[in-house]
Image 1 (tube, rainbow, N blue to C red):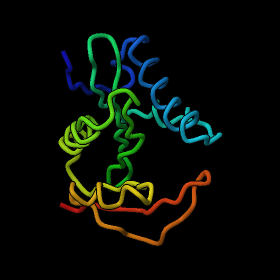
Image 2 (image 1 turned 135 degrees about the horizontal axis):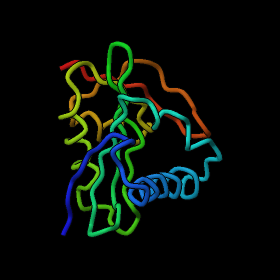
Image 3 (image 1 turned 90 degrees about the vertical axis):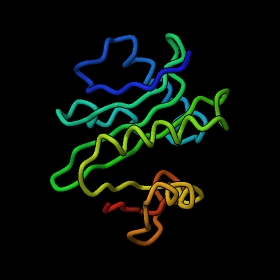
Length: 142
């Protein structure tokens, strides 16, 4: 049975945290062939929350919500390859949005701009390349 969950890093048991970080690494570092520091220190910030879909003990979709000075930042939205196409990314996005009470920003991979637009995000700057992948900064103000 699939369950949507969220917790601060300090609230996570080590096995769940490992599975969240493992999924992010598989998707962003291995599948997308981006050699970058997935463990960027932001997971340890006090305001950080993780959103994930669990299928039993397996973590199959994730997102990270960061608290910044005057806004929230959603990132690291990923779904395990064998569970894509079933709406799990939308499920974690909806829960992540519920955790935010002000403006929200994100850096969308360019091909996902329209997908993020369905959640009320609008482009807020010029396209840029990060780790070899084109991105567009986006914001949601309401």
